Image (cartoon, rainbow, N blue to C red; front, side, top):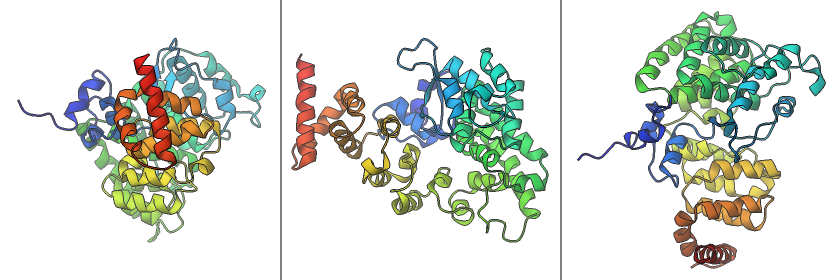
Length: 386
């Protein structure tokens, strides 16, 4: 019997899901994560995705939607209760969020109405929400809320609907609109890089030439040096989505967030992270793209970079699936001296079978890492015996 391909080996994990035939599954690296489904999700863009859970899921409580709306930068999460996701998506898709300021009592009436609606978002409504976010810069929103809006909407209507809607909107735009310096709308367009990876190959191949035609039309009307000002625009986002490393080098300021759609140059990503790892937010997808060197770079001086409870919890959630000695070392350090000791300890208990051999190997060494490994190994063995 023939062996399954790297992508085919993981398709059963997503049976019936819109991602079940995703292009990105061909990039799966078996064993990069502890579990096969984690391998699949990392290849599909983890943590730049959203997973919906039932409203009564005790492990993932409802999101305080009004509080999240008031915050430009809120607690990150991958799993959302379905009703919370519906309410937030509708609210973030309104043309105006606040009548003035960020006071909860001043939510625009359209947002207040959206929060009361709990029925599923239809395809037609999704198209209208996408149009709003691609053509308006709205006060009270940030890059984080734009990305969350996109991923939550995708989780509800599927990537194909979003890509179709976004492509048609871009095709209808004038060249002037494609070059407008719209920071948040162009950041929404940048999310196409993740969405295309989650489409079946034939669907992605249908949309990519259309998107490339839009980019070529924009370039034909541009200044001879269209990227020299490094400004955000729909055209630049398309360039970054379609042209990878070359686009990131020539059209951005070098911030690693613009490098997340580069699938064929791990060395470029590793070098870029190495220069700025001390000042950028860690991203597990960059570890997947750039290799474990990126995780080592993120791990240096992690206490300074991850100064808050939310930052440390998010780090564990997104990096925790990666099956590597580097992950083990970071979790041992966080178990002993962080704001999330309990969460780090829970990581060891949840993954005990997989990490005990790694702990045994680390315990043979010397220094603080070995002592921490010995202590943790003894605790896990006691629990197993008990």
